[in-house]
Image 1 (cartoon, rainbow, N blue to C red):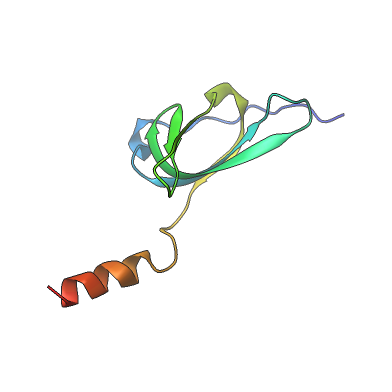
Image 2 (image 1 turned 135 degrees about the vertical axis):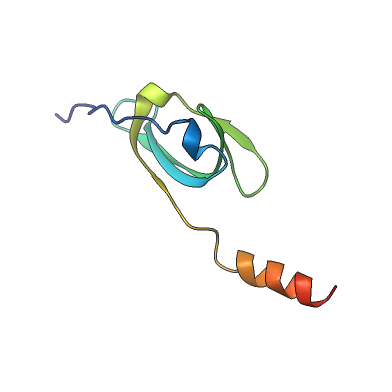
Length: 82
């Protein structure tokens, strides 16, 4: 049986960054993935603006990820049309 290995949770320097966080779920042996911008050390805001809470002690893995594909293109097109 696999045991939960403690991973250092993101620190305050990462707040605002787009992150992918995998956390152990309440059901044993299950996990869930969160993708969005880190609002604080226990919340992520997804692409729809929904704030999702997580327990930092339940983090299995996390990383900072780039912006969604097309985000920069849409922003650049918006600037051109102004």
